[in-house]
Image 1 (tube, one colour):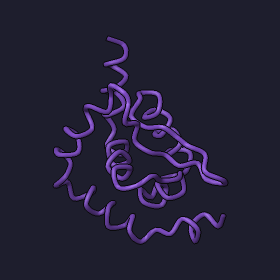
Image 2 (cartoon, rainbow, N blue to C red):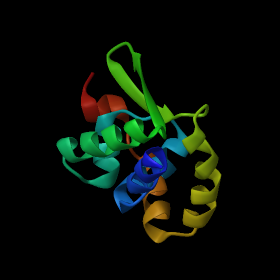
Image 3 (cartoon, rainbow, N blue to C red):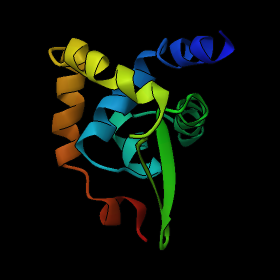
Length: 111
């Protein structure tokens, strides 16, 4: 029961849902997510930590980057299609998707 509670707590925040929807599009680093959501880096890092602990995402080091991506091989992953369909028409999700298209990680992070 504890694992299930952790999953649903992770889904209880709108910003974490927004992050999950963005990660459906492509792997992202913290600075890209921070820019897209217009939140503080520390806030985004906390959200990512909660999503990782619940099993929704993983992080992978890629040179200077730490990319976050959806975890395909976890029990939590079976919830993602349901969540995705539910959020597909949400205006903030649509806005995030459009904003994400304009973000260039090299310009943004300067790495």
